[in-house]
Length: 402
Image (cartoon, helix red, strand yellow):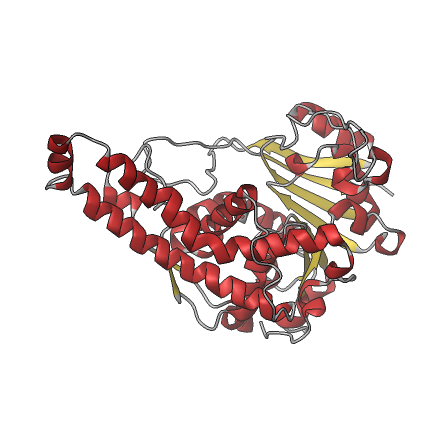
């Protein structure tokens, strides 16, 4: 996919992020978190462990620093892994600064501990979306919905006549895979961490397997072997631009023109009248449980789907806002609940899977198929960890009623 010189074109930014002080702060915090990754990871992961190690009695230090434990040597190996991950963070920072034409250092020092956590999880997510070793997780979550698309639109020879929306696009792998199969696809993402990362891997990497990633190097619990903790993978597993040159079905529109990304609140952006009846399909993977109010998600999807369009969903119900309390206005509040919109609007609730399906039907969809996938899928899961988490995902296809 060719790099586009205008960042607004790359991401579909329809506004200036520097015109809103809060959005500017969020953007700067994301950039700064990638800048600080190396320093904070070394301090929080290895420096503190060395301090705790040297607080041990001398006899214990001597035993643990010698074979077969070699704890100090292993911490040096973790430092090397952090440096390799930091090369990815630095590459994303450079591409982000160039995309926004930022030449000064105004963004420095803005990131909070929460922003740093997002930077670490974003870098780790490359394992799932852009490494060969993460293929098993992708197959479990992406292949079923890609097969659904093929089944629904099997009679359409030129898939570039089909428009697909992928909300919560993350690092862009599902968007890429939909495009790779010939469709016109638009991803949507609200997180600047994810947007900077997806923009870098899709538009600015020059070859496959160019970077070393140590996805589990910062994990010290439930480790069977140091070799598992210090597993190295190569990213990206393929070069996106080269892979799009031979897409399935030989569509009449080239890959660079069939794939786009919008940086916006999903509810606000796609709930607008200008997006009514725009897409033939909406694909949501590990997305609907990010809604504090899923009714608004359903309304938005119904708005932007054409009559007879399909909504394909796969994922768990780990409601992200389950612990959110009611909005409280006081004299120090910058905004009131009435002023907030989109995902920030007040109010939240959690439904069971059965209730979600009933709500989808009540709000104008017919459920065409549904199953709970018993095979289970991890999410950035170290397959060699002593602790294994797996989701039994709800997988369904719904058609919009006229």
